[in-house]
Image (tube, rainbow, N blue to C red; front, side, top):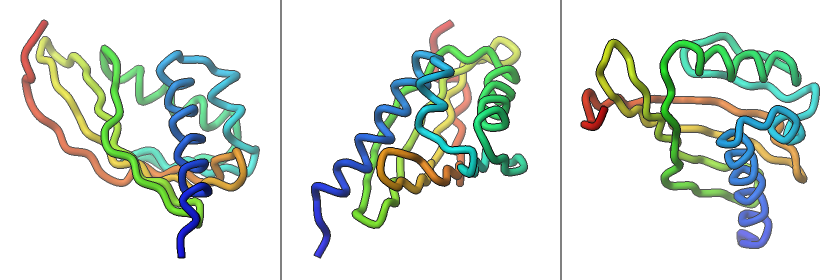
Length: 129
């Protein structure tokens, strides 16, 4: 039987990480990882450790004019697995787009031990300039 308190705690860790990402707060973002944490960005090589994770996050942002992001569904289990949807809104060549990225994270205690971006769906021109 799943302990809903553990699953909820894991989910809260990820939600707090996403809040730190929204604020672009390097110290807060990196506080959710250890030097052994592995981050697998979408369509990129995996990286390990604080500096490499921060660099990978910034490389993805630098490719577009990112206007912000929001989070959709999030589900978690007591084994540490958390799945979430992140919607990025960005401008490329004068066209506004939104991309939904599926995230799978492993949480142990208050730390993320693994984070994989597993898929993305794009919608061309969602309106607005």
